Image 1 (cartoon, one colour):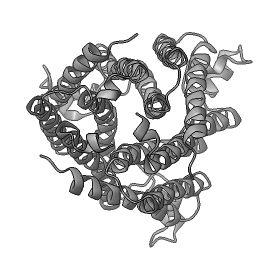
Image 2: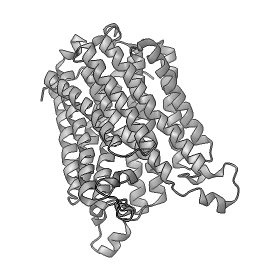
Image 3: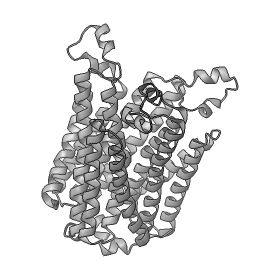
Image 4: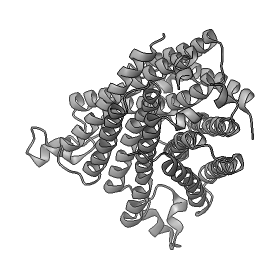
Length: 153
Length: 153
Length: 153
């Protein structure tokens, strides 16, 4: 194990993977914030806080566009950040240059932060689309190196 | 590879990660169970089993609140268990004490089992919310150790 | 790190995990293709391309059954491919025979490709259900080996 922990690229991967996963978890808290302020809950038992009146509780079960927007952003994170983590881990083990690896990790994490801001604030396209594409290109570049290093069908 | 397999913390991580991933897969079977008993399917081709009448098949395409509840629970698993697995793997490689690591893994897995029971059985809040928060705190604690050990921006 | 990269089973895992994650990312592009051809978008800012008329933009916000189908297929990938990657990584570290490991990886990746074709083309059941089950059985078989090798509660 010592050599993983003494390996600069692996340490860099650990740092950026943890940061971007924490960013993804942040979406859960943002969803809760919007659910509370927009009064929109998915489950009957969630509507009981401070409410006894069944009629008022029913109103809290409606969907809200701001909540749905944050949830779509969270879903997009799942669809893009998890592939980055998996392929990034394998990429780190192929022994790339530290500077090349850092470039990949930083561009990806930066692109996802911009993507989140563009999604949650509903910035005009193509801001969100470009951020999404830059993140994917980073992942593809790492996947290319993994496949050319490891290819063993 | 031998030293990963001879490392107690890594073995403990492998055990608990596998258990909690299997728990997540269980949600797929629970969804199928509810789809069959509540007669609620998402795709036209799923409604053909034992049905030839197009009118009756159309009725099977409606959503059902019990099915949607299980699917929300599955989604919450994806949003929480995957971060645990990623950060837990990196955490196991930082060389923590076995007892500390076991505490993290056991609390997380326990919290997710309680979360699932609370969600599927619609137990009164804050049971589900607390279970969710305990699981996240475990993940945050491991992320803190990964970042303080590996931080390399 | 050298011994991971010199290990045949780990190289095979890296190859198949990367391929199946790339297949999962393909679903994002398929979603975009269906959104563009079916004119169905989730966000107001996505409807601005080539449209100035608010009435016409509103029409683009409706859901479309083909888009929803591809998104369900993507969701099923998240629910099944990620468990494969996690358990497959731990399985590769238990030191299985290369031929046994290759059999698991190939059957899983093949089953997911068939699953995607069956889902997107709406082939009659049980084609999609069987492909899904074969993939899961591969994952269960690997989980069994991980637990019998590593079990440390």
